[in-house]
Amino acid sequence: GGLMQFRAESRVAEDATGDLDDEGSTYKFRRSRFYMSAGLGPVEVFMLADPRLDQPLLDYWGRVRLLERDSIELGVKFGQDRSAFTRSFMTWSPGYVFMERPFAVDDMRYDRSPGLALDAKLFGDRVYEFVGSTNADGAGAPNANKAGALFARVEGSVFGPRPAYSYGDVGRSEKPVLVIGAGFVHDLAQLPASVAGVEVAERDVDGDGDIDDIRVISISGDILFRYMGFEVALEGIFRREDWGTIFDQADNAELGQLFEFDDKRNYIGFYGDVSYAFDSFIVGGRFGHHRQTPLLLDGRTREGAPISKRLVEGSGVVRYLHGDRRVYGLQYTYLNNNNKDDPEVLNDEAHRLILEAQLKF
Image 1 (cartoon, helix red, strand yellow):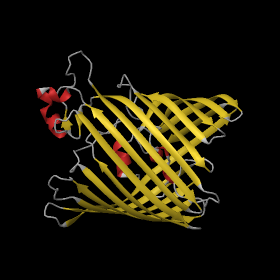
Image 2 (image 1 turned 45 degrees about the vertical axis):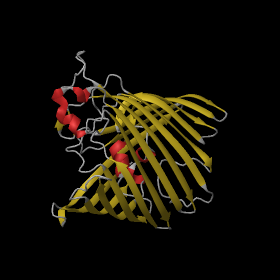
Image 3 (image 1 turned 135 degrees about the vertical axis):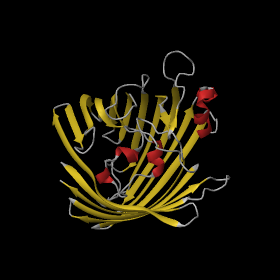
C-alpha cells in the first residue's frame, strides 16, 4: 500500500518593520510513501520507502515473537524504524488530524535510526512496553555515535482498548477510551560539525582523540481520550542538555554565545489537540508552546538559530473524508516567537495556510 500527498501552502510573516510580508506560496507534490508488510508464524517484516528521497528506504524492520502465553506477548525487534519516544512521531501521517506535527515535537523529537529492541504486550495488549537502543545518527547514517541512545516507552489503556497510533476518533468509539504513555531517552550525542549554522571549531576539547559528546536526557508524557467522535490529545516533552566543558574552549566562543554559555540547558514543550469527527468531516484545534533549542538530534540540523527563545503555536483544521482513500484538508497556523522577559524580536509573528489532498492506496 501507500499514499500520495499534494499541497498548496502560503506563508506570511512580519518583516523588520513589523509589516506582513509574503514569504512565498508553493504548490508541490509533497510526499509519496510505499509500504510492504508480511508475516509468517512468529516473524513479521515491514518496509517503507519514498523513491523521491536520496535515501529512499525509510523504515525496514523485522520482529520475532519470542513468547506468547495467556495475556503476554514478548518480541525482539531489529532494523530501522521511527524512534519510540513521542506518540505523535510514532504515528504515520495518514493517521493525523492536522497536516503537520506540533512544532514542540518537531524540535525535540528523535528521528529514524537503526537499532535493536525488546517489546512486550501485556494484559491482552492493554499495556505496551518497549526498551531498545539505536545509533541515534539518523536514517541510513553510519554509526558515528559510538555510545548510541537508550530508548524506553510504556503506554497503557486505563479503560477501553488500546488504539493504534492515530489521531481523530474517525470510528466514533462507542465506549470511552483513555490511554496514557511515557517515553525516556538517554543519549550521548556526538558533537556535530556545526550547530544552527555555527561551525564548531574544536570538537575534541578534552584532547583524548575522540569527538566529544553532549549528554541529552529526554522525557515525554502523553494522554489520549476519545469517545463518540470527540478526542483530546495532550503531550509534553522535557529535555536536558549537558555540554560539559565544550563552551570553555576559547575556539568555541561563538558556539557558547549561541547557548549563552549555559552548559546545562533545560527545555520544556507541550501541545494539546482537540478534535471532533462527524460522518465525513473532522474539525480540530491546537495550542502549543515550547522553548526552542538550537540543537536538533538524530542526524537532523538547523540552518540557523531560532529567532526567539520560545515559540507559541495555534492551529485550526478541517478535513473532508471522501471514502476510505481520499482526504482533503485546510489548516491555518499562527506562530508567535516570544522572548518572555527579554526584548521582543521584530519579526515575531507568522501565518501559514495549507491546503492538502491525500490519496491512499
